[in-house]
Image 1 (tube, rainbow over the protein chains, first blue to last red):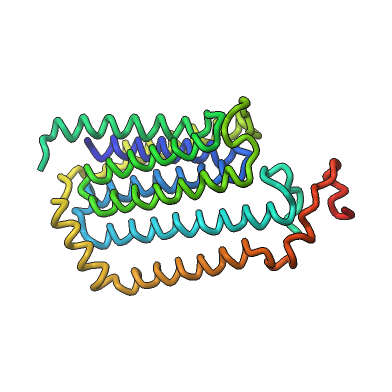
Image 2 (cartoon, rainbow over the protein chains, first blue to last red):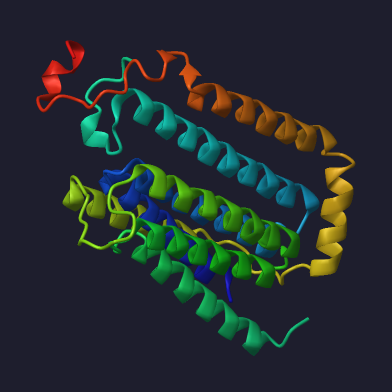
Length: 101
Length: 189
């Protein structure tokens, strides 16, 4: 398990996430793509913390911040999906031509 | 510390699992199954993080994602068409461009990882790292920790405000009629 191997796995997860976030029509699937991107960057952060930065505690602290960002993104995403569905009955991006409520 | 060969084998298993399930998320007909594939991908990444010595972060990731994916599955059953995957589902746009963008992102980041010249020092002792993180959380980085907590609280309040029946657009029932067949008629509907 080298730093390079883990970074390649992280890059693969990020790439899949980019594909998903750009190609999916459904809001929830789109969020899954964003989650995968954060997943990849979190893995890259942890491997650099572990194998390159000598395992200092501040690096893990940044991981905690990453997870907070993840949770915020999911919570606000679900709230926006609920709001948009209530007003527009839209569940895919193509049904939303305008953002104006 | 575990046997290095064992660690390598576990890493290969987790890495393949993370990537394959991550890919399957966008290649399954059932959205609920997609949520559980994503959960499997996160669990595998959590496993790699444990192997790297970040035991606390890895376990917290698995714990958090288990709850999050269940919420995601519920949201899908509530709102989305075809949650059970009874019909084949292809819901993509600009598929080719997105695939190219994904491959380019992967190649660029993998090149950075390969040729960045990152050091390969051995992973830190997990128990020591966890103890250090605990002291950091309630010591030097307490302000960051508290800010994360307040951010989550603000997010909760904001999410309830956005998703509430009386959001900023007035009563939810006002705009909830079916959209017209022609998208351009939406304004007059």
